[in-house]
Length: 278
Image (cartoon, rainbow, N blue to C red; front, side, top):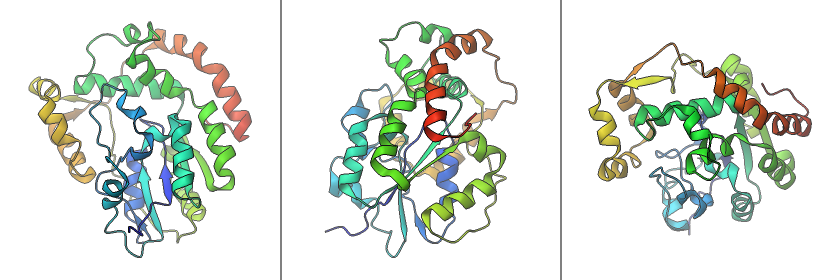
């Protein structure tokens, strides 16, 4: 019988600083985060419908083994962005632990979509211009870039289900004023406020140092091994294999196209949350 049940779920979205949040929380003595950041247990089997080779626990015992070392921790966290996109995940989480707290991190949907594409380009999942992947609504690429930037319906569902146990913060807030936002997070979790070193950047626009890296990413064995690597080691590997690039492409045409898609969803979301997000 496992007693160390997660009671905090950070549910997204992808490319919205969930990795930074993982490391910030890891510094706190009252918080446990597993070595493998993203568990995806409560988004099975839906999360399998992707071109990513993601780690996921096969059953509840397998899932809870990741939390064996969480003894005496007040907050036990599962940081899986995929949970945001499935109402079934919300239902499973509240059934699993009725006292669960939810943190949602959201980013300007256009910037999020671009960042997602650039990540896929960097690691070799795509090799065509961004606009190519925005033309066909029936592809997995469209789902990742556009579908994952439409937040309103699922945030609304989580808000109705978890009520005061849900905190929504924006990527912009976290980036511009991390100390203030992390204090809000600590207060929400009812744990002591602590000082955090915010100077380390955990995600940045980069390019591979060698074309061989793109080849390796296409190998099933490489992907199988990589998904089991602890988050701290992944950060070191990224630094070794990729160069930081300061100037990003402009994507002006794509931004105009996406603005029309996301505008209504963003308006409804801001009205729901009664706050300006981006």
